[in-house]
Length: 260
Length: 263
Image (cartoon, rainbow over all chains, first blue to last red; front, top):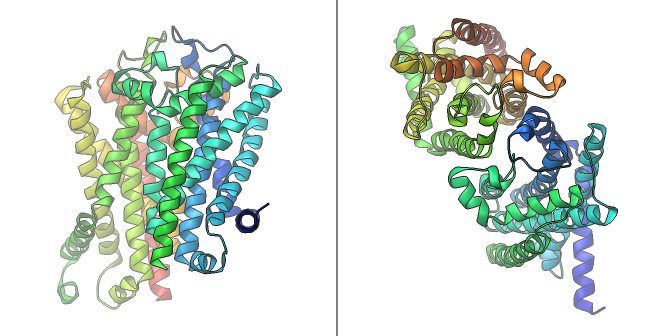
C-alpha cells in the first residue's frame, strides 16, 4: 500500500468512526434515518396495498415486497442526505475546518463520510427488512439476489452521500438542507413508487421512463421477487451517477479548501 | 411600539398581523415551499395512483379529484410550521420580552400571530384550488362548494396554526416546533388521505385511519370535490377543526401567560 493510500485510508476510517460514534451516542441523529423508512413502509404498504388489485398490476411477490423495494432505495438515498446534514453541521460548528487542516489527505474525509453513510444504510435496511418479514413480506429471491439488492442500495447511499457532501462543502451551512434533499426527493418520487411503470400515467410516466431511479426500483423489486430485471441498466446508471457525484464532491472539497 | 401603547385591541392585532405578513413576504421561501411542495406531491400521487381509480368501489374516476384535498392539509401544516417558527424566533431574540413591556394584550399577540399563518394558509389554498381546476379537477358541489372548501381549508389552517403557536410558546425554540411537525405528517399518511377508508386492505390501518382526526378533515374537503354536499362529512370536518382550535388556543393563552410572567 502506497503512503498516500495509507493516509487516505487512515483519514477515511477516522472520519467514518467519528460519524458512526456520533450517530450511536446521539439518538437524534440515528432515529430519523430508522424511523422515516419504517414509517413510509408502514404507510405505503399498509394503506395502499389494495392498489395491487388494479387491473394490470403485475408483481407476484405482493405489495409489501413491492414497497420494500422502494423503501430500500429511499432509505439508502436519504441516509446519504442525512450524512450531508452532518457534514454541513460540522462546518457550521467549525469542526470540518479543523479536520481540513489536520487531515493529511482530504479526499479521505469524503470517503469516510460515505463509509459511515453506507454502514448506517445497511443497519437501517436490516431493521426495515426484519420489520417487513414480521409484517408478512414475501421474499422469493435467493441469498444472492438479496446480496445484489444490498449492493445496489449501498451504491445509491454512497452516490447520494457524495451529492449531499458536494452541496454541504460548497454552502457550509445547515441552510443547505433543502438543496440536498429536494433533488433526491424528486429523483425518487418521479419514479414508479406506488405501481409498476406501465400503470403510472401522465407526465410523470414520461419522466419515469428516463429516470435512473426507475431502473433501481425495478431491479430492487426484481431481486425480491427472485426475477432480476434491468440489473445492467440499474448498475450502469448507479455507476454513472456515482462517478458524477464523485466529481461533484471533489469540487465541493476544493471549494471548502479555498474558503479555508 | 408607540403605536401599540395607545391602540385598542383591533389595532394591536392589525399591527402584529401586518408584521407577520410582511415577514412572510420578505422571505419568499416561506411562501414558495408550502405551495410548491404539496402541488408536486399531488402531481406525483395523481400519476402514481391513478390505477387505483379502476378498483371496484373507488368513489371517483379521477385520482386528481380524490387527492385534491391533500394539499390543503399540507399547506395548513406548512403555514403553521412557519408561523410557529417565527414566533419561536421572536421569543429567542427577545422581541416578546420587549413587547411584554408595552400595554399589548395577550389576545392581540395570539390573534396577530394567527393572522400571519392565516395569510399563508389562504394564499396557498387559493393556489391549490386554481391549480386543481386548471388541471381538470371538478368541484361536484359547484362554485358555492368551492367557497365552502376555502372556508374549511382556512378553518383547518387556523387549527394547525394554533397548535404551532402553542408549541412555540410552550418551548420557545424553533427546533422544537420543527420537531413536532413530523408527527402531523405521520397523522396525514396514516389517514384516509390517499385511499378511501372502506378500500384499505389492512384492518389495522383502516382502524388507525378511522380514529385519526385528520381523516375527517380530509374527507370533509374531499366530499365537496367528489360527492357534492355531504352534511355529515362537512359537519365532522368543521367540528374537528373548531375543537382543535379551541383546545390549542386555550393552551396557547395559558402558555403565553406563563411565558410573560417568566419574562
